[in-house]
Length: 119
Image 1: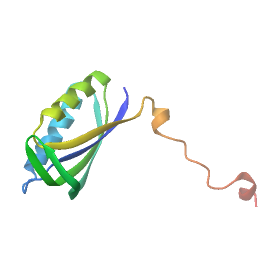
Image 2 (image 1 turned 180 degrees about the vertical axis):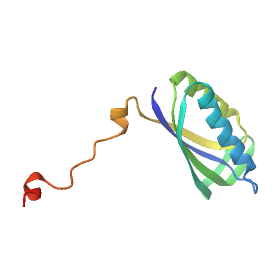
Image 3 (image 1 turned 45 degrees about the vertical axis):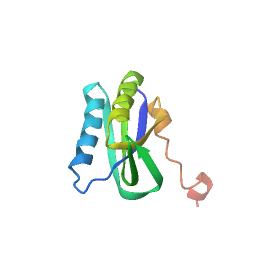
Image 4 (image 1 turned 90 degrees about the vertical axis):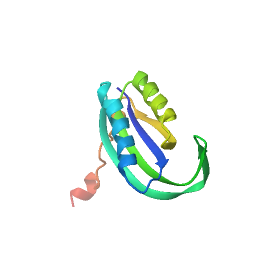
C-alpha cells in the first residue's frame, strides 16, 4: 500500500467538535477500508493567505491539520470524494510519499568518518 500525506484546511468554528468530527470521519474512512492512519497533526487556526471561496461561502480563517496514512489508490479516490463533498473542508491536498518502506525511511548517515573515529 502506498504511503500518503494529506494537508487539510477546514472551516474554523468556535467549538472544536466540528473539526474533531471531520478528522474522525477522515481517519475512519481510511481504517474501515483496510488502511492505516499513522499520524495526525494539528497546525492550529491561521489566517488564510488569501480569501478562499468554497461551498458558497467566503473564508478568511481556517484550521490546518495533517494526516499521514497508508491506503490503496481505490480507497484514496473514495476518500477524495468524501473530502470534496464535505462542507467543512475548504482545501485539501494529498501527496504520495512512497510505495515501499525503503522509499519512506532513509538510513541514518554516519556522523564520524572512519579515519576520524580511529584517532
